[in-house]
Image 1: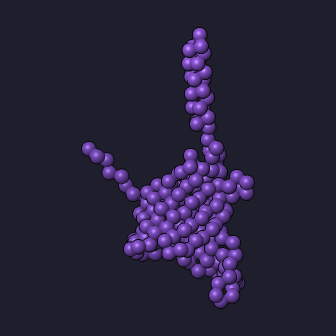
Image 2: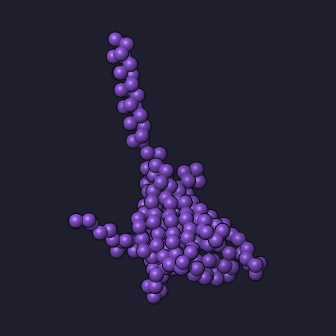
Length: 174
Protein backbone atom coordinates (compact mmCIF):
# COMPACT_ATOMS: atom_id res chain seq x y z
CA UNK A 1 0.00 0.00 0.00
CA UNK A 2 2.85 2.37 0.83
CA UNK A 3 4.45 1.74 -2.53
CA UNK A 4 1.18 2.46 -4.28
CA UNK A 5 0.73 5.69 -2.29
CA UNK A 6 4.32 6.70 -3.09
CA UNK A 7 3.84 6.05 -6.80
CA UNK A 8 0.53 7.95 -6.78
CA UNK A 9 2.14 10.92 -4.99
CA UNK A 10 5.09 10.91 -7.39
CA UNK A 11 2.79 10.73 -10.41
CA UNK A 12 0.67 13.59 -9.02
CA UNK A 13 3.77 15.78 -8.55
CA UNK A 14 4.90 15.07 -12.11
CA UNK A 15 1.47 16.10 -13.45
CA UNK A 16 1.50 19.30 -11.37
CA UNK A 17 5.02 20.16 -12.58
CA UNK A 18 4.03 19.59 -16.21
CA UNK A 19 1.00 21.84 -15.81
CA UNK A 20 3.02 24.61 -14.17
CA UNK A 21 5.66 24.37 -16.91
CA UNK A 22 2.92 24.99 -19.48
CA UNK A 23 1.88 28.18 -17.71
CA UNK A 24 3.35 31.14 -19.48
CA UNK A 25 4.22 34.20 -17.44
CA UNK A 26 4.88 36.23 -20.56
CA UNK A 27 2.11 35.21 -22.95
CA UNK A 28 0.00 38.35 -23.03
CA UNK A 29 -0.61 40.31 -26.20
CA UNK A 30 1.74 42.99 -24.85
CA UNK A 31 4.50 40.41 -24.34
CA UNK A 32 4.07 39.29 -27.97
CA UNK A 33 3.99 42.80 -29.48
CA UNK A 34 7.60 42.62 -30.73
CA UNK A 35 7.44 39.06 -32.10
CA UNK A 36 7.47 40.36 -35.68
CA UNK A 37 11.19 41.11 -35.18
CA UNK A 38 12.10 37.54 -34.20
CA UNK A 39 14.10 35.63 -36.83
CA UNK A 40 17.35 35.49 -38.71
CA UNK A 41 17.98 38.53 -40.86
CA UNK A 42 20.28 40.03 -43.44
CA UNK A 43 20.19 43.79 -42.98
CA UNK A 44 20.78 46.32 -45.74
CA UNK A 45 20.91 50.10 -45.67
CA UNK A 46 17.52 51.42 -46.78
CA UNK A 47 19.19 54.01 -49.00
CA UNK A 48 21.09 52.12 -51.70
CA UNK A 49 20.72 48.59 -50.36
CA UNK A 50 24.36 48.09 -49.35
CA UNK A 51 24.95 45.40 -46.71
CA UNK A 52 24.72 46.71 -43.13
CA UNK A 53 25.06 43.43 -41.25
CA UNK A 54 23.17 40.43 -39.97
CA UNK A 55 21.05 39.84 -36.94
CA UNK A 56 19.73 36.81 -35.09
CA UNK A 57 16.76 37.60 -32.86
CA UNK A 58 15.29 34.96 -30.57
CA UNK A 59 12.93 34.58 -27.65
CA UNK A 60 14.70 33.67 -24.42
CA UNK A 61 13.97 33.25 -20.72
CA UNK A 62 10.79 31.21 -21.22
CA UNK A 63 9.54 33.74 -23.74
CA UNK A 64 9.93 36.71 -21.40
CA UNK A 65 12.76 38.36 -23.35
CA UNK A 66 13.89 38.90 -26.92
CA UNK A 67 17.63 38.91 -27.54
CA UNK A 68 19.23 40.37 -30.64
CA UNK A 69 22.76 39.42 -31.67
CA UNK A 70 24.06 41.87 -34.27
CA UNK A 71 27.10 41.47 -36.51
CA UNK A 72 27.98 44.48 -38.62
CA UNK A 73 29.09 44.26 -42.23
CA UNK A 74 32.06 46.32 -41.00
CA UNK A 75 34.45 43.72 -39.64
CA UNK A 76 34.86 43.54 -35.91
CA UNK A 77 31.72 45.36 -34.74
CA UNK A 78 29.09 43.39 -32.83
CA UNK A 79 26.38 44.11 -30.32
CA UNK A 80 23.46 42.63 -28.48
CA UNK A 81 20.17 43.92 -27.18
CA UNK A 82 17.86 42.54 -24.55
CA UNK A 83 14.22 43.52 -25.05
CA UNK A 84 11.31 42.85 -22.72
CA UNK A 85 7.85 44.01 -21.79
CA UNK A 86 7.93 45.49 -18.29
CA UNK A 87 4.52 44.71 -16.82
CA UNK A 88 5.14 47.13 -13.92
CA UNK A 89 5.59 50.15 -16.20
CA UNK A 90 3.44 48.75 -19.03
CA UNK A 91 6.23 49.52 -21.52
CA UNK A 92 8.76 47.73 -23.66
CA UNK A 93 12.38 48.27 -22.68
CA UNK A 94 15.62 47.67 -24.56
CA UNK A 95 19.20 47.60 -23.34
CA UNK A 96 21.79 47.66 -26.14
CA UNK A 97 25.49 46.89 -25.52
CA UNK A 98 28.24 46.63 -28.10
CA UNK A 99 31.85 45.52 -28.23
CA UNK A 100 33.01 49.18 -28.36
CA UNK A 101 31.65 49.78 -24.85
CA UNK A 102 28.62 51.80 -25.91
CA UNK A 103 25.20 51.26 -24.38
CA UNK A 104 21.72 52.55 -25.07
CA UNK A 105 18.55 52.30 -22.97
CA UNK A 106 15.18 52.74 -24.64
CA UNK A 107 11.53 52.38 -23.66
CA UNK A 108 8.17 52.67 -25.37
CA UNK A 109 5.39 50.63 -26.94
CA UNK A 110 3.94 49.24 -30.12
CA UNK A 111 1.58 51.50 -32.02
CA UNK A 112 -0.10 49.81 -34.98
CA UNK A 113 2.59 48.02 -37.00
CA UNK A 114 5.47 49.91 -35.31
CA UNK A 115 7.47 49.40 -32.13
CA UNK A 116 8.67 52.86 -31.07
CA UNK A 117 11.29 53.09 -28.31
CA UNK A 118 12.89 56.31 -27.07
CA UNK A 119 15.80 57.10 -24.77
CA UNK A 120 15.79 59.54 -21.90
CA UNK A 121 17.07 63.00 -22.72
CA UNK A 122 20.85 63.45 -22.71
CA UNK A 123 23.29 66.28 -23.43
CA UNK A 124 26.05 66.12 -26.05
CA UNK A 125 29.36 67.99 -25.98
CA UNK A 126 27.64 70.95 -27.67
CA UNK A 127 25.51 71.39 -24.53
CA UNK A 128 22.26 70.71 -26.39
CA UNK A 129 19.74 68.08 -25.32
CA UNK A 130 18.89 65.06 -27.46
CA UNK A 131 16.89 61.82 -27.45
CA UNK A 132 17.33 58.62 -29.44
CA UNK A 133 14.20 57.22 -31.04
CA UNK A 134 14.22 53.87 -32.80
CA UNK A 135 11.18 52.72 -34.76
CA UNK A 136 10.79 49.17 -36.06
CA UNK A 137 8.11 48.90 -38.74
CA UNK A 138 6.54 45.52 -39.53
CA UNK A 139 6.16 45.77 -43.32
CA UNK A 140 3.50 43.84 -45.23
CA UNK A 141 6.17 42.05 -47.31
CA UNK A 142 7.70 40.42 -44.19
CA UNK A 143 10.63 42.81 -43.90
CA UNK A 144 11.23 45.05 -40.91
CA UNK A 145 12.52 48.60 -41.23
CA UNK A 146 14.60 49.94 -38.35
CA UNK A 147 14.86 53.73 -38.31
CA UNK A 148 17.12 55.27 -35.65
CA UNK A 149 16.66 58.99 -35.27
CA UNK A 150 18.45 61.41 -32.98
CA UNK A 151 15.98 64.10 -31.96
CA UNK A 152 17.50 67.45 -31.09
CA UNK A 153 16.24 70.77 -29.89
CA UNK A 154 14.13 72.89 -32.24
CA UNK A 155 12.80 69.81 -34.06
CA UNK A 156 16.27 68.96 -35.41
CA UNK A 157 16.26 65.29 -36.53
CA UNK A 158 19.33 63.34 -37.63
CA UNK A 159 19.17 59.79 -38.97
CA UNK A 160 21.72 57.55 -37.25
CA UNK A 161 20.66 54.34 -39.04
CA UNK A 162 18.00 53.33 -41.54
CA UNK A 163 18.08 49.61 -42.21
CA UNK A 164 15.86 47.00 -43.80
CA UNK A 165 15.78 43.56 -42.17
CA UNK A 166 15.23 40.80 -44.74
CA UNK A 167 14.60 37.24 -43.55
CA UNK A 168 17.34 34.74 -44.26
CA UNK A 169 15.90 31.97 -46.39
CA UNK A 170 16.58 28.54 -44.94
CA UNK A 171 17.45 25.85 -47.45
CA UNK A 172 15.97 22.42 -46.89
CA UNK A 173 18.30 19.43 -46.85
CA UNK A 174 17.09 16.86 -49.33
